[in-house]
Image (cartoon, rainbow, N blue to C red; front, side, top):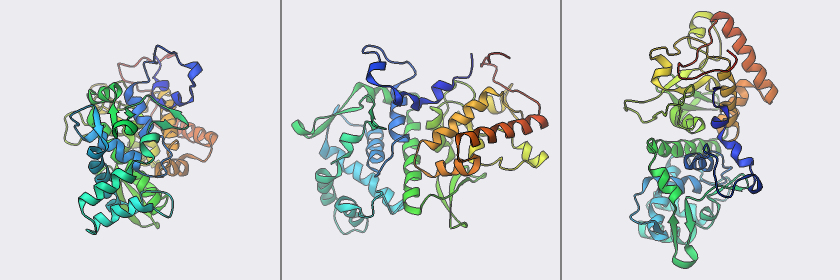
Length: 357
């Protein structure tokens, strides 16, 4: 079986229309996990409210499927207040409006929690509940239904509870937080180059060519774009620190190319992927070998998925690999040719079959 490119390129489903989709059956690759990630990772996001609502839904253990707006309001707005302390802007327009002004007043101890909650109930959900399931002018299956007109509540759906049953459910928390921080960094500090600190594996934003701001971890930033799986095999991976199955940050083109042959750009974002421990350095693992050419397709697709989002990783990938699609293909092909000349290998996991070998 060829490596599952179509599954990794999960945003393709957004191009489907109602006439192309069965009324009764769903594509098995288009799971609730996939749809959730499309909401969080692929939105244009003029404000941070989708992130705040998504994070609140994931974190709160609501006692009923019927969630009152008054019960949703405080955890929702506190998430926004917390992020205002990290990034000064939470909306793209210059005038941030009464609601965000109230959040800043709360952070500055100018209004009490009860007043903030009351303001949030009135103004905090004006657009986000309607817009939450809209992705690129398409609507994904709903994780909640809007019942505000009748009972001032939302109703959590079966799709939401299927998310809660996921083995790696906690990964989704970190993915929302990471995407939010990348987005907030972009609109607050501007689009700046992103690098990974090799010691902490955190992503750093380079501001004014010298100031380095810690934005988020590479694991939480990249995991959603790999659908929570190892880059090389179907194994589910964990991004929770200090867990037994914590994934590795792997150099697709191995780091030894830099040490032994003076290759440039090895530590850049385009060349970093998340790997399960077995594929990275287990029995029959990749170690310092070059992956099979089929995985180069997957690397191109993963990097292109970063381009789908408006955050610093988009500009970083473009600056590192090329402005146009043709440029990026040419860059990867040249790098592969040069690397293969130095380390002539075509590694693949034992569990993955490659066609036409």
